[in-house]
Image 1: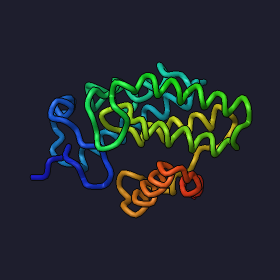
Image 2: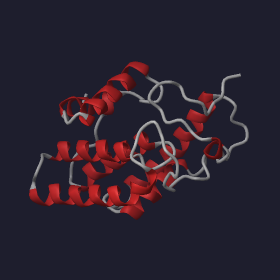
Image 3: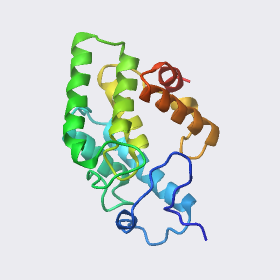
Length: 195
């Protein structure tokens, strides 16, 4: 039997044994069941987030958003990771780097440093790069970017027009766009988010 919590070799984050023990639903034995449980939780969180006025540039809100997105599935939802990952900064730097990102983003908005789509794409990229949580960082950062767009009167991104968990080719394009942004080329990500 395949380990539902193991890496899918698709750019996902590998969980430690302790993080795996944080799984709440005992019925999950397949990756598809895990994805389904997480997706149901995320849909509830989206309804909560988009039906209220929220400030996506508040650290407390971002942590609460992650908890709302994954709290029915993972005990550690909304809590910063304490372990190293295949992506992300050192865990001890998360609070400082996140505060810096939020301050930078506020500055970009207040000063019109970039167009709104680019602000949201840069926000998304850096949030993924920081990698605050044990898992779910991409999905969290996509929803946070969409909420940021809404807060400045813009439409949500289309994110390649597909479910990035299940559609392999779209996920590959997304990861390639993030990797280009890692190398300071935001162009592919800007193209992807509206494709």
